[in-house]
Image 1 (tube, rainbow, N blue to C red):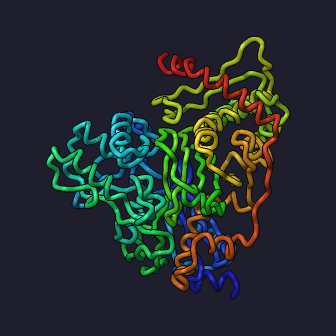
Image 2 (image 1 turned 120 degrees about the horizontal axis):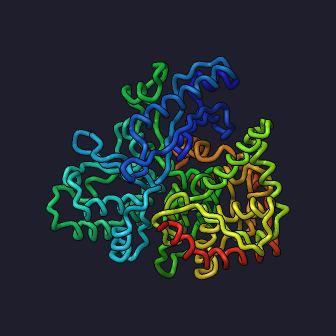
Image 3 (image 1 turned 180 degrees about the vertical axis):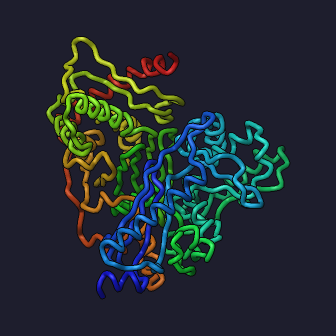
Length: 530
């Protein structure tokens, strides 16, 4: 069957992911081959001290993204899209979207980027004996309760961004287990929210007298492969303003960007891991056994099929690099040289490889926002050097790439050095890895672990979500087929990517950089308080 016929007979799969700066749609065939894509750029806003996106932005962005996909399909194949074999939505994990009984949003969407729940995070971590990071949905909910916010009594449902979009398109209040594990803890033995912790939470807030309990206002948890509802007629109109899309299309469970990153890099098996590096950065390792104790720097979440994962999530990664590249871009324009951003990034990343292993003593902090992993509730991007340091372009750029990975390394060292977690291979994806070799080799040095990048890494989360949509069909045919088997045998079939092993000199240089970086935390605190 030709591609046009595949598309017009509805034998393709759609994945759409809401990233922090881009909404992207990817259409694939049953083998996982990408057929078409569409995207829409957007940005969060700081409103009254809260990082947020309005719901109008969510729908405007989604509709433009989907329209761009349709345009790509028409341009490539001359085809009209009326249905898919399955659809899946994913988005930035965590955050807080709370609705009343009429489905009305009670307070503006509070995204993962906010660091306003320290009191709740600490209290819940102690109460549960389980790390509850500030960005988790339960921390946002409990902080609102501690703040005695009036909307709390009216909550009928709270969820993540992916869960919200899925609900609006299907009518189903459900969530994939991977995304759910970023709301509050999952019991790996049941693949559902941990009931003991639900009971503890309900006791904590019992004195408030709310007419709801935590289970009642939470989404139902589903695992990869399960059908999570179908597209309603109203949902079809909300997604496709052209009116061509038919109702009744099955949906995969909505997932978080961490889970789709694992799928896109085939790192859902034990002793595999992945690093996603863009506006934020996180690394995940599928665990062989439970951690011995609670670490504030390490989240325990799950794969899309429920396996326990150790995760280090940092709020800041490439934003400060982007800001400096913009300065170089302004300078080039000032001098009458029009240089594409892609060329600028490539040249500046490549020159970083000529820098000293310890960046010549230069240090920077990329904290555009707060960074809970290192204990900062606010940030102030900062560059530090002494008169004796080797200040040149190569070291300057290498320093910024180190900085983008430094907080991640700070957390991962606890997993690898303290807990002796074994990881045979890490897979890298995201903007930091777009320039060949550079980000990959520096990440390998940071983690002292081989890092692989696949040809498909550029497809990222939306492609991973499309694969989860296609797994719904595969699972329907064979419910004994695990997600790992499906990815290994059907999608990747032996493709393990291009691997770079850690260079000993670079590993030692990064460790030296980290010694100075950690000592400089006092300077970062002072900068925040200026």
